[in-house]
Amino acid sequence: MRQLCLGMVGGLTTSTWILWTILGSNTLNLINKGTLDIPDLIAKYGVPRAIIETWAALPLSTVTIWGFFILCFIATLTLINACSYTLAMSTCKGATGYDEPPVWVRVGWSVLVGVIGIILLALGGLKPIQTAILVGGCPLFFVNILIIVSFMKDAKKNHWKD
Image 1: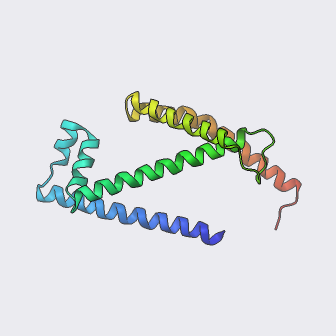
Image 2 (image 1 turned 45 degrees about the vertical axis):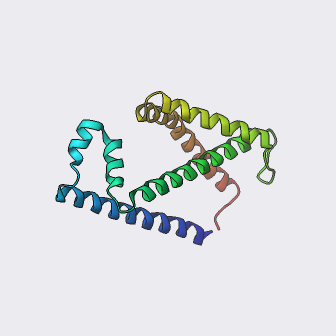
């Protein structure tokens, strides 16, 4: 377990650092050379267009953009699958950590999570998503505090000192 956690933290930190170093340096280089006028692109078209133009300036831009799109698609599918599995496990009556939730429950939650994402995107981009995250996340802060308090009480009750 320790190796898994260290690998995840180390791998994610390293890959994020490499990604931001390469893309950040490339963007600064494009600005300094005058190849792209990022502030003008942001003012005229917005941040998403400036990001796409920065990616389009990379070598093999078509391959890079498609690769990025495929990775984002896989990450989104993985996220929806994990969310639906967690929701299915927590909503199935009498489910334990060893039982699989029924497929129809997982599919139902997958469709619902996907529909919620599509609706939020159709409502107008990032602002509704940010608002939904804040509205949904604020109550979860207090739920997490209650979970931590409950865990500490259980640990004390069951003498978890080792």
